[in-house]
Amino acid sequence: MANVTYQKDILKDKVAVVTGGTSNGGLGTATAFHLAELGAKVYTLGLKADETTIPNVLDVEAIEMDVTDEEKIEKFFSDLTQLDILFNGAGVNMPDQYKYDTYKKVMDINANSAFHISNLARPLLAKSDIASIINVSSMYAIFGSDMAPAYSASKGAIGQITKSLAIEYADEGIRVNAVAPGWIDTPLMDSLPEGQAETIIERTPMKRLGKPEEVGQAVAFFCTPAASFVTGAILPIDGAYSLF
Ligand SMILES: NC(=O)c1ccc[n+]([C@@H]2O[C@H](COP(=O)([O-])OP(=O)(O)OC[C@H]3O[C@@H](n4cnc5c(N)ncnc54)[C@H](O)[C@@H]3O)[C@@H](O)[C@H]2O)c1
Image (cartoon, rainbow, N blue to C red; front, side, top):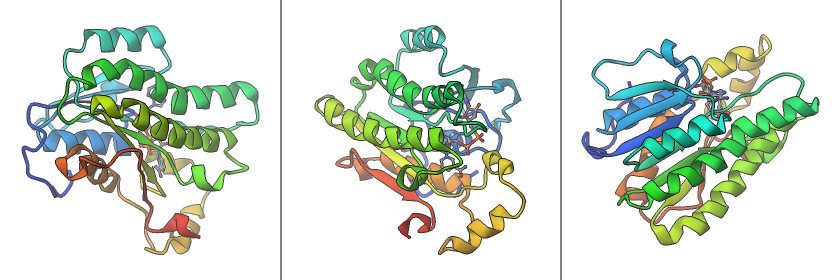
């Protein structure tokens, strides 16, 4: 559970959907929990939803959902009656991204689904007085990576989707922003080769990994009145890793 920076009930009576919010220790899950701590009802959509450990004081419902299953995702949004916050956090990084099938799969999960889901969420968000979409980019959007070309392309696409939708949705009062986490200590880090975490920490000016709840706190900022004129922004959360 995060330290709470904001007024505890600031998201009372608000509804949030968090994709990629089903991984114990993941940053989507930490974000979901933080939005719930601030009073929101939160639906987390992702894989292995039945394994998510949800603190029983929070109003969080984990739903098994593949974000690339268009029919199922369209049904979910057509059944929903209120939406104030959408966090597009579902994401994967996988081996063999020079295989075209793998490339397309990563693009579908990380970027194309965020575009599709944002459009499905638009009509309900347009009725909210705090409507906010938060996407998840990455420092790979800045650097690119020979080891992860699809992941890098998907995170670059997220940046441009964020900016494009921020302009398109502005008239309807829907703000669209992104976070660009650096190296955050989540299960995704388990796939790193041995010793790489130490190398990353040494290269990070703040000399540590980020914590999932530090992403959740930044996402909460975008959902509060403190960010009421902030849209189209991409916020690095990386201890200054991306500055050089
Ligand atoms: N951990 C980091 O250092 C870091 C850095 C930058 C960006 N990110 C991004 O943050 C997001 C969350 O990553 P994490 O570190 O919490 O990883 P994680 O592996 O802990 O969580 C990933 C989440 O995405 C879900 N998911 C994967 N494929 C899906 C699919 N097809 N349909 C629905 N859900 C799916 C999983 O079920 C899980 O809930 C991802 O977009 C990732 O790219 C992470």
